[in-house]
Image (cartoon, rainbow, N blue to C red; front, side, top):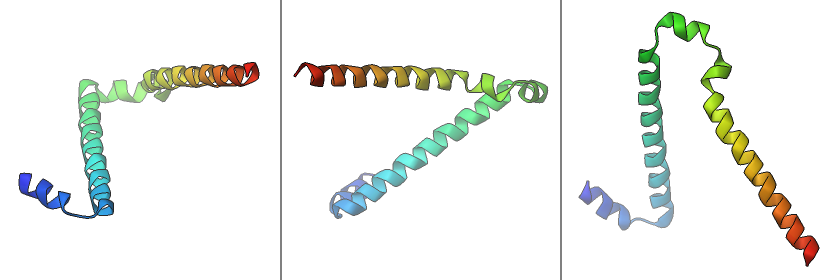
Length: 85
């Protein structure tokens, strides 16, 4: 592993960036895959079929909804600052 990292340090920046993106995507896919297996194994097939998709993504929608509100507040603050100047 250390030899790979040392060898990668000597490569050009674009090669290092591609390697970093590939490694990040690989780890993300691995984590999401493990997460899906755990979520699926905690429920029976009947529970999975009866539960709607809306209930499954509710926490994710709450996060994005709050992020949207935060961005709106930031946008308002920026526009108010510009009007004051």
